[in-house]
Length: 308
Image 1 (tube, rainbow, N blue to C red):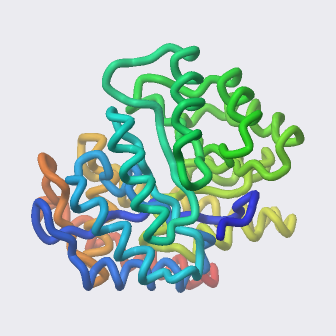
Image 2 (spheres, helix red, strand yellow; image 1 turned 90 degrees about the vertical axis):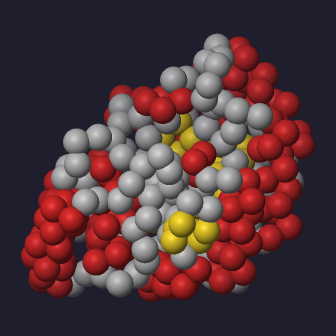
Image 3 (cartoon, rainbow, N blue to C red; image 1 turned 180 degrees about the vertical axis):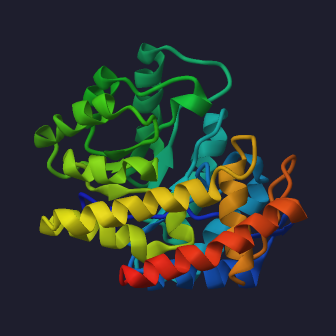
């Protein structure tokens, strides 16, 4: 079951693939145990980092079933149901509930942009049919439509909407939502961009959905814990290391897909899982992989020095 609010680090799990429509099953098992071993508070599957919208519906269901079965209640599993078709979102939501997921996550439908009144109407209709609590996913760079503050206030009036993950990178927006938390003490507020994790927790957020936690989960867990304990010196050291991970792994390629490629490549170099990308994207070429291989030992040494 998901505690409310959900605090700590909830990695947006990459989806280990071995082919265009086939999971890397052993890699998925190793990845789940790797992040759980780092002390994370939950798992988020079928998000942006998990390449959710690029996967077939069959594969999404297989991923949900295998993940929930292996996690077996050790932490909450959050399942992304973002879709342009409401029926498909509801179908996956029902499957996730039967598989043992704890909550659902949805961004606005992302093809034909809706206005905020339409978005509020969509949420009102959607949650009536969902079998699990819903977290909103604010990702305007990819969906073209944000959950603006008035829509978030509207959502807070619905007890079946349990929180929000903000990937906008707009800290003024994030602070605006944090200021609303006294109206819903059970509401979960998580930050997406890990470069903003420190700022988000200090602003009153509950933690982060940090992509780098796929590779170095203990680092991000330690940062949130340091903030909670008021250990500012350690928090800032850990934050600097989070920025090092970001600059070392996410900026090797020239395109937005480089973030996911960097994560998958690092996991592949560490022997955790395959780095096959959901089509039409491809894994790093040999020259880019060599950069990741060259940088990983230094990052790991720095983490050991920090006790992570």
